[in-house]
Structures are given as structure tokens and as C-alpha cells.
Image (cartoon, rainbow, N blue to C red; front, side, top):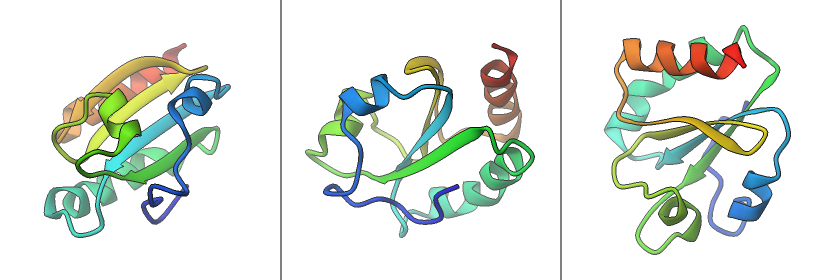
Length: 108
């Protein structure tokens, strides 16, 4: 699990994300975002028992192509992907939404 947000030069491209095999949770946000910091413990607790799920945190902001390609407007924004295909996408999820998205990701 990635503990910090990848900066623009470190972030994968959309093509790389689309070609990623397996289970992936792509998280968009920033280290200074209060909503992102509040959601972090819930996200971590859902990921912890599932090492097969890759977690990539990407710093987002105006003009960042990866975030724009997923139409990110609110943080944190979580994209749940299986073999590069979006299973769910959530913005500022509550606990129930987060749990449902993880269940949908793992169900495949």
C-alpha cells in the first residue's frame, strides 16, 4: 500500500492503469485535504486484510491528466479496477459506500 500521494512525474499514465492486471484501488487526493485525511484510516482498514489489492495514491489538482481522465472533481476519489476495468468509482465515500465498493471489487 502506498502511504503518500505520488506526484505528477511519478504517477502512472492512464494507459498503464488500463493495462494493470489484478485488483487496484486508485486514490486521488492531496496530503493537505481534510476529507482525504479523514478517510485514510477507513481505506487502510479495508485494504489491510487484502494484500492482493494494489493501492496507488495519486496527488491530484487542476490540469492533472490522470485525474481528468477519470473525471475527478472531489477528493478523495477512489477508482476500483479489476484488470484495468472500472468496477466502481466513489467521491468522498462514507463507510457503507466504501465497504460495498470493496465487496464488489473482491467479488469478481
